[in-house]
Length: 69
Image (cartoon, rainbow, N blue to C red; front, side, top):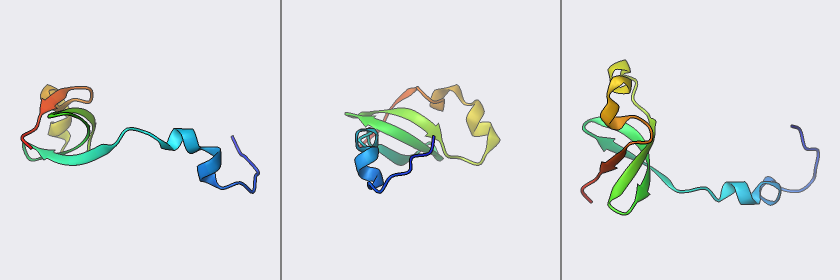
C-alpha cells in the first residue's frame, strides 16, 4: 500500500508504533530478542548465526525463559 501524504509517518502510523518493548539478551551464549514480562522473558526471535541454535527447543520463539536480573 502506498500513501501519498504530506503528514509525517508518526501521525499516520502512530498507533502501530506503540508496540511492546523488545530487548536483546544473551541466554546460554545465544543472542535472543525477547519481550520482558517481570523476571521472565518470552523469546521473540533468535539472533544467532549458528544454525544449531535454531534447533534448540528451549529457546524457540514463544518459549518463556527465566532471567537473573
